[in-house]
Image 1 (tube, rainbow, N blue to C red):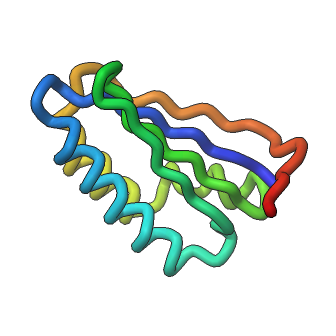
Image 2 (cartoon, rainbow, N blue to C red; image 1 turned 30 degrees about the vertical axis):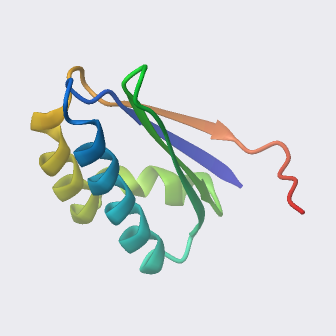
Length: 99
């Protein structure tokens, strides 16, 4: 499995809007991308961070997100609301523990 982490830093006063747009995008993207197994949307308004973590079946599927039109539309929607450019990191999933 492979993990893609995508972090956004909303402009002051736009945290809730960015979090909502991100959450809606993630739910829709998860529903029509079978290689995406799990998505978490995390945030901390005080530090101005909204972060998504997607768990994919493989690296190729995680990489393919960058050229997906749905992802491009999401970036277009949140771009004007961000204080700094978005940050994307890909990682290997070493362990996943759930109960």
